[in-house]
Each structure stands twice: as structure tokens, then as C-alpha cells.
Image (tube, one colour):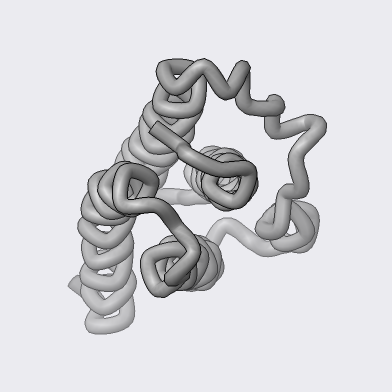
Length: 151
């Protein structure tokens, strides 16, 4: 799939973002008070892990070797995970913070899709993963709005 080191680097960065976002969603699920919110955040964490696994699999299929684990990759979203530990368990606040991480993740994918140096094959892989990221982000936005409205 990836035809160049640029593609590998881009996908590796997206793996780091998706992995860090999964960790942040998992942590937010642990902070949530209500079952609905906790379940939604846990589901989002699973989706993000699946996105990262899909991207890793594409790198491996290409023979580019195994993508670095998130421990050796930059984790751009990780600092917010640390900040979240001090947040109280109010569901609206937990979802708001998770939503900010979602925005960063979506922006990373949108940036990759706007990258003219990305090969067509890599762009298709990123686009497929972006659909899941965007759908999950929209669901998080809707959940946040319903919490703000008191639903």
C-alpha cells in the first residue's frame, strides 16, 4: 500500500493519533458517571483502536514492516489524557474534553487527506479510516449536545 516513506510516516502519525485518542476515550469512560456516556466512550475507544489496527495492517501488508507501537511513536493527543485525570466525573465535562480530542483526531486525518504528496493508495486507506473517525466524532458531538440540553 504505502509507496513512499512519506506515506509510511503519515500513516504512522495517524496511528499515534488514533491510539492516543483511544486511550483518552477509555480514560474518559472511566471518569463518566452515567452508563450511557461511559458505554459511548468505551465504544469510541474500541473504534479508535480498530482504526489504528487497520492502519497498522495496511503498513504490514505493504511489506513496509511493522508500524511502531504507540510507545515509540509520537502521541500528540496524550498530554490531554494527563490533564483529564484531574477532571471531576460530570458527564458533560468528560464528553466535552473527549470531544476536543476527537477534533484533533479529525484534523489530523483531514490534514493527511489534503496532503498532495500522499500516494493514491495511501489516500484511500486514510479515507476509509477517516469515515469511521468522522462518524464517531459526529456521534460524540451529538452526545455532548444532548447532555448540554439536559436530555
